[in-house]
Structure formats: structure tokens, C-alpha cells
Amino acid sequence: MLIYNVTVKIETGIHQAWLQWMKEEHIPEVISTGCFLKHQMLRLLEVDETEGPTYAIQYYAENNEAYQRYLEQHATLMRQKGFDRWGNRFIAFRSIMEVIA
Image 1: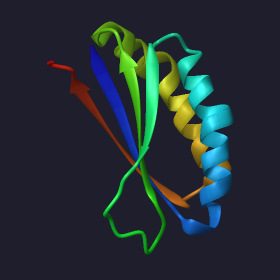
Image 2 (image 1 turned 90 degrees about the horizontal axis):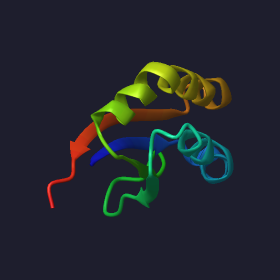
Image 3 (image 1 turned 135 degrees about the horizontal axis):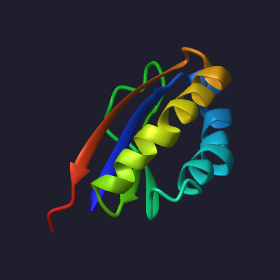
């Protein structure tokens, strides 16, 4: 199993609206691609929140093929929707991890 992790730092001014959008629109849309089995959303603690909070959204893919399908067929559109909605008021970086135990 793989975890596709997206870490996002959000400007304080859009925090609540962004959080609602993530829960009600973006995450359900990513899950509806069929590429991921489940997700979890976490807020990082003990970090500098001067410029806003930081979240990690983790999507669980059964295998590399499902993850690659997401990248090839869906990732560009999903990322563009975020930029269209929030512009440069957030910073995101992505990583992929393998579940070992």
C-alpha cells in the first residue's frame, strides 16, 4: 500500500473556507477517482503558524498502478482547481510513501 501525502500551508485569511472546501469538495472528488481506498487529514502541531496552519492530507492507494493512474489521469486537473480557487495563498508539496508495517 502507498500513501500519497500532500502537505499544505494555508494563509490564515482563507483557512476556514479552505478547510470547508477540502472536506466538502476536494477530498471527496479525489476519492471519487477510484484511485484511493481511503484518506485522512491531519493538522501539524508544534509548528510556526505565523503565516497560517499546516495540514497533511494522506490518500491511500492499493498499489503503484492506482497511484500512477491518479497522476496520469487526475492530478493535473485537481491541482489546477486548487490554484483556480485559492491562487497563491497556499503552498503545497507532495510525497509518496510505502506502508511497511
